[in-house]
Amino acid sequence: MPRSVTAKRVKPIDQATGLRNMVANQTTPQVGPGSEVQLTPALPPVRVISVSSGKGGVGKTNVVANLAVALQSRGKRILVLDADLGLGNIDVLLGLDPQYTIQHVLNGDKRLQEILLPGPAGISILPAGSGVEELTQLTHTQRLNLLDEMDALEERFDAMIIDTAAGISANVIYFNIAAQEKVVVANNEPTSLTDAYALIKVLYTHYQEREFKILVNGVRHEQEAELVYRQLSTVASRFLGGPSLDYLGWIPLDHHVPLAVRQQKAVVEAFPDASASQGFHRLAEVLWSSSRLTPVNGNIKFFWRRLLNL
Image 1 (cartoon, rainbow, N blue to C red):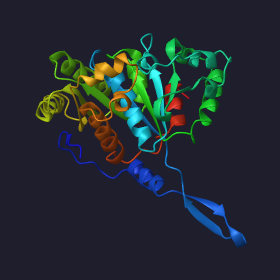
Image 2: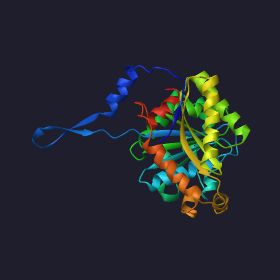
Image 3: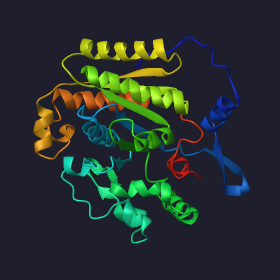
Image 4: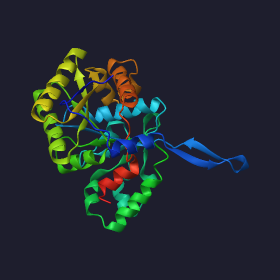
């Protein structure tokens, strides 16, 4: 189970908590035989998960690709949003050739479902490309039209994973504050820790984001991963006080990962018995099973509402 380090504080049961509890037990009435009203559980909201890193070179996109495939292999329907502007390369990593991006949707040339790219194990990829830069410049009508397009995706997926750019640029912040769950990837390099802390600090101090999930990537053993996590969480607790950092686990340093990259495959598919592949499957299990209660607004449409400022 993931551990959490946070400043000691009392979390009162507020109205938002009540709403979350109500939605968690929500039912949908249906008319059955004899005009009797039957209650069936409502469909769970689609989880929206951003994956970011303070600096490049820590394997963030590789994490996104393999996490998506691992979750899909566990029966989850996964959509990946490639939001790394200018450097979006999850398609290259997986040997795919997108013909269209979200830019074609914004131009009115394609429907959203037409640009989805089928990936390994059945995952779907939404290539964003440079079109993401125009999301903040759309007219109100264009934003509503894009939101309508998102409606069609709501029932097709269980989760959307966002591969953001590295760093703390406006676009990285943009996607993180719109997502409901935030995964920060770090390794044992001092610059990785420093930049991961900078990302958390900006999101916490300027945007009141309080909950983060920490994944340590590419380390030799579990003790090394736990040390990285403790260093990051201790500094965040000491100097920021408020954010909660949950430890998701670690992915082993494994020579099969670059081999899979050269084959343009996810390592969990190319080398399913490799230690890194086992790490990604553990990550998928922990992330899915130990998540906190999904907020009321935790779905794709709400994500895009926040992103488009509607």
